[in-house]
Figure (cartoon, rainbow, N blue to C red):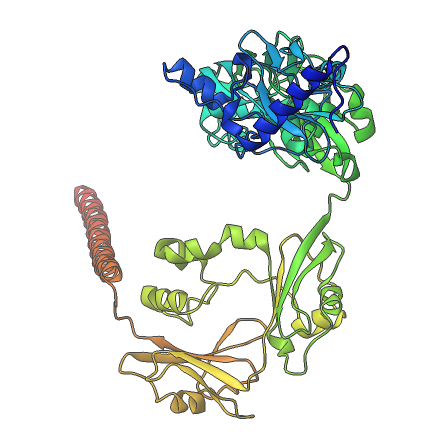
Length: 585
């Protein structure tokens, strides 16, 4: 029930109810005050068109603006373009929309005009609600923000697209920075290419300044916002804010952060920064739970290393290098694959956890495990040798750990290197290491492989049908070569490759054990153009060496003959002189 305002007479009350009835029956019979146009109506009026004025009872539809949640009425600052919904009455309430005009005021029908721009939403809502309630007694009144406005902010500094940018009223500093850079904030804070010269400049995202008429000047740290989610480091914007992103040289103005941090890199320094501030800005507020110490290396100053708690008093300067030492620097992961009950990654302590302990963590060996064929790959050796080096013949050939007498010449070594994948294995006795009788320590990214015993022998190289054949206890290498169809026309010596050591043993009559392989070497026949060239070069070198040796022998003989002739001449001359002397006497 609508209660008549103070001082009204009965005819005026009747007229008021009549107006309400007309409003219910014909929504187009009434218009909003001039200051109550919606954003679409105001845009039409600015374009010289006649705005279609909606009924006071028709609410403004939401624009689909994405929000972080309900707007904080105490934090939100009202400005021109904000649209409010005013509701008067109970179940049959009269509802209408009003917007803040360009001069910063909101005009409410039958209640008056109220200052709005630059004031908090809570205060504007309270003023409008009180003004309407002064006109109506004992009537519920509600005022809500229906559609937040959009406004311009000004972005300057080290971004590709500085200038004026349109943002919603619920935008934060990061949204304007992204609009002026054309990139996401996380991408903007990640520098793809290292700086190599002092003239390279990066945006200083830890020193973004915001000048605002309503909230004063602020310096915000967007890197900290990314790491911690601290909204104080990424505040809301207001109409006409000026945002400046300075630049810095990573070589002369930055601090390098590494170690156990989430976002290692080079960052600009904020006034009063400490080592802890920068570590938290790159790793979050929980950094202290996984970082034990902070190490600072500075030019011209001694190296300092302090507990993480004391890093709050460690000052930093441009050019410093901060290293976050993890709580357990030796913690790592190792992997076990193959014939164990639970293969996968397991935590280890570098240099302490052993192969036997890793096998126990993985549930032990399966019944079909080939223990003597197990091997351990070390990540450091993978980086040093790797599959990439195996692709380069010149790099592979010298690395083949085979006796040159076993694989004669260039082609034997080349063929073996191409047929057998080089494995960076750790020297160990597999059965003893798996059982824990031999303490083989593990290191970061080590990989233990325990093969399955399928009862097969691999026969490969120069055989008719390379592949696996059934294992028969006591059989020799020649037996397995026969099962693989025998040697090809270019087949040479037969070798047995020990599953435990990877070593080769020549001999067709050698007994093959479980997991061993049989390899048939190749005659020195080039099968690629590159090795054909190498073969020709090797033959040329051999011919040149033989020629040089023949020439050296010829020159030696010539020298010997010359010396002999000289000696003979001297002897003859001496004998002649002696003869003459005897005759004269």
